[in-house]
Length: 129
Image (cartoon, rainbow, N blue to C red; front, side, top):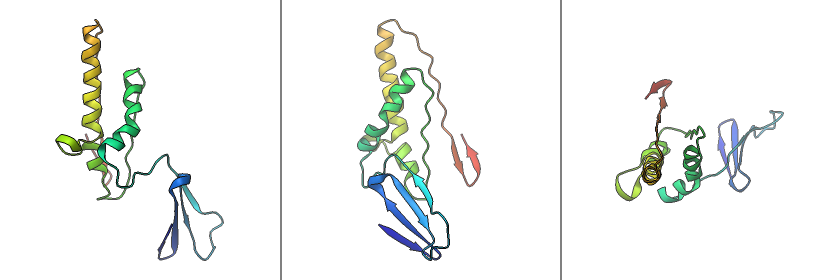
């Protein structure tokens, strides 16, 4: 589908994982193209976490993991990451719960863990930790 914004048009191709921003008059040599892995349209918190939960397993396997949420103000980044208490928990509380659950199971088997994490927000060019 396409949206028109003053001097540019945005062409979204979710099934191909691509967005193009073009000059409708054809003055730009090449459109700006952005690629992505997945778009969630009306997805539940369960569905979103299901898609990124492999990153939690990678962290448990000892890899450094980063999940980057980007978008306009009001687009749902904070809700996706933090959610609400109960059924609508976001990615961060679900990930922490999963990590602590696995750590508890492994502790019974004699494993010893050191768990460290950091959460960072950049808003209007100001860093919030």
